[in-house]
Length: 573
Image 1: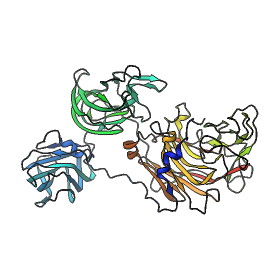
Image 2: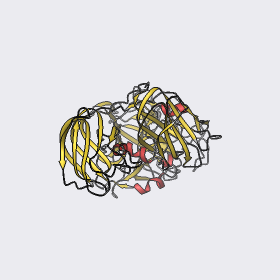
Image 3: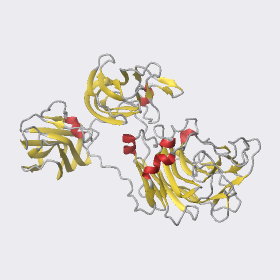
Image 4: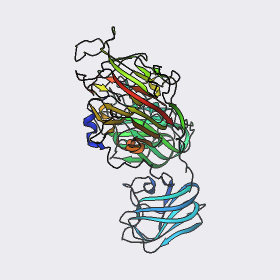
């Protein structure tokens, strides 16, 4: 069954990102290179005030390490295991080193020089080096200013290295909280939801007693652990001021991180502390609501970690064909039941059609699936009032089918070659080729399962197509996506076009006829909009709708029967 409240206002939400198909294609998404040093254990000869060494390896160019105001200072990183070092990036604050060395060591005692200069320039220095070791050090001997040395980032690149004590310790461990919410707005939002590595479930303070300061959530790691990293994925109800605290017994707490300028969304915190229990202790809310976390992840060494289920592998390079339907059967044959199941019933979103049990879907004998919308009353089935007759009996029939019972998958290249119909009130691509989280079938409500719309076209504007994703933190009119248009002398009903999505653990790249039209980067979405929930099995749906909130009503000019033709659907992994 299709979820409600989907698309009202979408045009307003995405108009600012309108793309033109004739423009030069955007490059495919590429994940940023992560340095071997990020999040690793780091020490220094000295520290000025709150500017700790860990700030130089946290991946945040807004935080920094600063030394004492003397020469002969150093900062060193433990990569966890030996690595082949090929490049160093130093992002200096104004207080930089005029003379310094880059050194490596196997034991943090005996050091070998990889690079040396007496004419350091400050700013961002990218140094090509060559050497092998577990520990990497910047050893400075002459300041360029009267202050000390200060680095926004100290990044080490190469191959090898280890986790550096970066094991997920909190998965599945028992949690506790000052309060929790369980009502129609957040059902069973218990502490355990923050430690389940499910970005679509969350903990929230009680809506009746928990919208106060302070409030907290904690996790019992099962044994004493050394904590080096915390990841918080906040709901919009986030903490402006909070501490990360550790405790040996769940009673006596010691702060290892504190802020009064919490940003919400995704925060990755480099910390250093020891304890069995770890707590987020919020002291000032950023909103009038309480506190809520989609995920609270604790990384380090020790504890009693429960291994988290492995994430699915990315597609091969190049990917191979794993599923397809070329629709090559005889004219009049129904869709292959080993691949597609009909999804009969009424629609949602004020749609006017009744979906039949494959009566409106058949092969044409020329290699196409034909999905047909007809002006055909279905007695005994209620729909919103028909704009032409006023009848609340469904006045139209159409087709909807899916692979939920036959084929589900995670990641891959998904593509379909489709010709859409034209006409007011037709919704040929609303669900025509999109994917819904497979757990929707087992009762998890939309949008918590995640939805990936590969293509939607409105019959009243067949020059524009839309690609969108929906999740708990961004859905309906707030979904993340964009429209793209064909040149002035063409529209999508003129001929077949190929819509595709390349879906990996890093994000989704949408393309039309081989040209990239939209790139969604997972990390960027998490940092700016909310949790990315598209790392689990999905299934495909083909659909042709009539009427509804977004396309508007049919009228006397709408052609019936209206036909959507599908040449093929293919999945590569």
